[in-house]
Image (cartoon, rainbow, N blue to C red; front, side, top):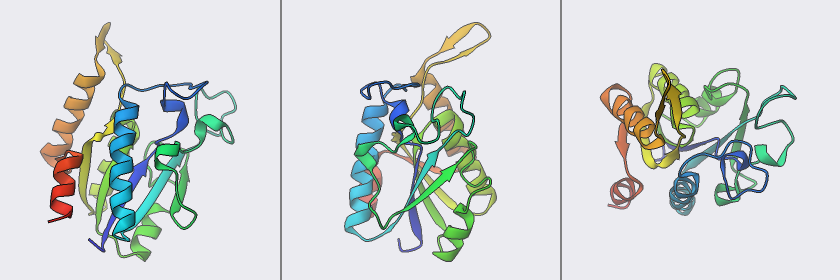
Length: 188
């Protein structure tokens, strides 16, 4: 596991309906962050690699994650410790125009455990890029959150979005596990 990193993507205040003034609440963000925090604590206990990624939108008219806003801050449930790596990004893909790849290479990371939001956007873009770079990837399905989407005049529920993306991830990009199943393997 020394060559593995926990990658926490965009678990930020604007995604939480419990955050006053949240600009883009997701379905199940509380549950996903709770599971992400359990994984984070296990990685901390075992002194394993942890990388937090936060999205900052440089457009002052952006609908959410405005630079410097409280909504763009990482949620308290997974608040980084001072010594943990935090990467800021401006695109869905956490590798695009960031130092993520260089940091992973420096730490000799070859495997990523990915959690965060939104499943259908930044988790998806980052996972696919990671796989293209040759990383072994695991996505923790119950530590990721998304929202209802619309297509062709129909609402696609967050649960359907989540299931569809997890099925696609598992098909070709990652091992997909629950928090409990991953922890059983980690602690065995």
